[in-house]
Amino acid sequence: MLHRLSIRDFVIVDWLELEFASGFGTLTGETGAGKSILLDALSLALGERADAGVVRNGCEKADIAAEFDLPPGEELAAWLAGQALDVGDGTLVLRRVVDAGGRSRAWINGTPAALAQLRTLGQWLADIHGQHAHHALLRAEPQRALLDAHGGAGELAAEVAAHWREWQRLAGLRQAAEQDTAASARERELLGWQLAELKDLAFDAAEWCEINAEHGRLAHAADLMSGVGEVLDGLGDGEQAARVVLGHCSSRLAAMAAIDPTLSDVCGLLDAAAIQTDEALHALRRYRDRLDLDPARLADIERRIAAVMDVARKHRTTPEELPELAAKWQARLDALEASADPARLAAEEAVACQAFDAAAARLSAARQAAATALSSGITEAMQSLAMPGGQFEVALIAAAPSAHGRETVEFQVAANPGQALRALAKVASGGELSRIGLAIQVMTSRDSATPTLIFDEVDVGIGGRVAEIVGQSLHRLGRDRQVLCVTHLPQVAARANWQWRISKEIRDGQTLSAVTPLDGPARVEEIARMLGGVDITETTRRHAAEMLTGKP
Image (cartoon, rainbow, N blue to C red):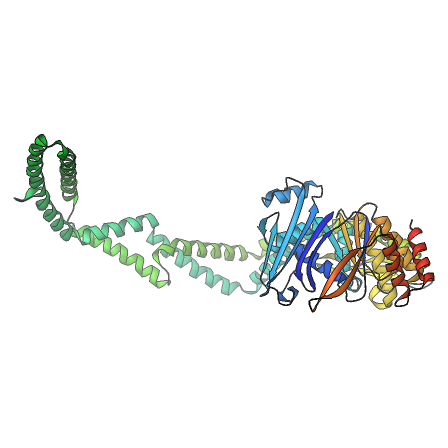
């Protein structure tokens, strides 16, 4: 569950440090006081996109941190281990900083994280139902996604999409093979000729390095031999060679060291220099003996280098990149040869089609089971939401195969007894849509393992007895999960286990948001305000107290 939320310099919040309780809690207050701003801040910590507009006016950055208990589950534990995230104390802290330029940074337990990591982790921690979620239910894609999630068919839906893509890929190759045989043959011929040319060249990267090094030696052999002779004369073979001079100096210094031992160290240095000089002489003589003046070999190497360079220039590349070019050509030739056989491609296409059909059939069965359960549950919920005799059905309508399977998903409703089922988008009024949408969200949330559920003004458009029923539903949901709800309805707020009032105040000439936890009397006053508006009477206060004491 969510334990703490720290917000600094976010929109109209200067600094808030909030500690959350378990059960069902509500956030209430006047319109525009900043109730939804708190949830917006939490959404940022859970990986939602942000821009510079969230930074409070005049501040350098907005800083949000949310602390959660680590939910149980092997899948989450494996994901955290794969991300190398330490959660030894069982706490997850998600932090997000957005600077005034719009640049965003994120951390998980102090480790820098990407937004994708925050979003993935957020799916295990909290489920936020926005105030416009009802309207999303009018579109086919959210309806299908909700049904698949409710039925646990998300992975199966992804498998169907993968089979569909492979089927369509093979179908495209088969069609291309049937329609463009001549062009494919010309390209295959060209690639075959180019590969044969590279094969005849027999280019080898290691050999290329060796012959270039050998070419450098052979091309400069005369200069190298002359230079080696000059150095040998200077070191040991000439009349004033360094070895002779060192020997004379060493002997003279040894005699002097016999008189003054402090010169012994210098004698050692000269002896070492003489030894190094002798080793250099031996090495240079061996090098001179190996040095070869071979014009024929030099000509062979120059012809080889010219042949390689000609091929590389021809294909606008470097010699070092010729193996990669050959691999690219071979891959393209293999693909063309594979696509040059329409009959074989048709057979592969048929296998891919069968795989799609099998996966789509399993998906259809899973959707049918989920649709039956969801239809029954929401129909039952509608009876208590001032829609007696109403009916809800998740219709699976056969359709041409697609990445989403072999059917479309359509939410249908009959708001009143005797009415025919029709698409939700065509028949539901604003109030009916709010009630149906809330029933769907509450029901699907029961199936979710997410420990924290957040409802942001999802009760818009309802009131009276229906609002009381909604409050009771959220209260029951709070027995098993942490439930947070932003609401304007006193019937909903009165059912909460705890309540905060969000308000605006002027400090130092700035409008800022404030959060006040409400105790018994203060909570009665807030419920009375929600009931009676500006003028709060004693009767209103008694009504508010009755609503609070009448909680189930």
